[in-house]
Length: 149
Image (cartoon, rainbow, N blue to C red; front, side, top):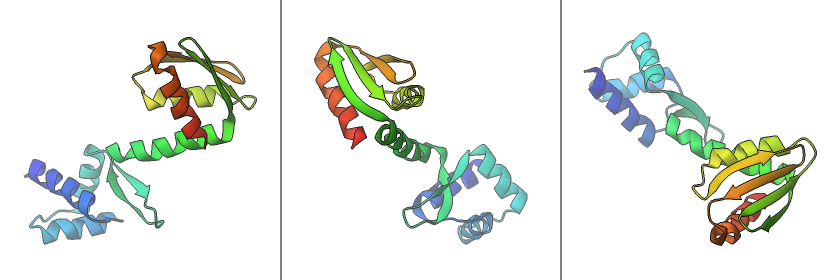
């Protein structure tokens, strides 16, 4: 019963805007599941559901996997606000940032988990990005420039 209910919860929140636990309980009831608030609360925790804000400003439940969209928005914001220039040599890309912003931008790069990026080293206002293959450097430079726009 629990597994079926949790599968139904995921289905409901992927197909409907569910703002509250009460909304979720009602949607489950409409689908033949009778649950208590405590059960809903446990299911939300076990399923690692989060609340996100939709484009129209409504907070609603979403699976944790949707956090990648939020994360990518924040990564883009870090780049727009902090990265000033992009240059490269061989298989290394050098990003110049505003003072004290390199570590935040490098963390953002690492969070993107691009397979082409081996790793980053950040100082105060400079980031070195090691690229797996130098033939991929122009493509990655383009991606960085796109993030900056």
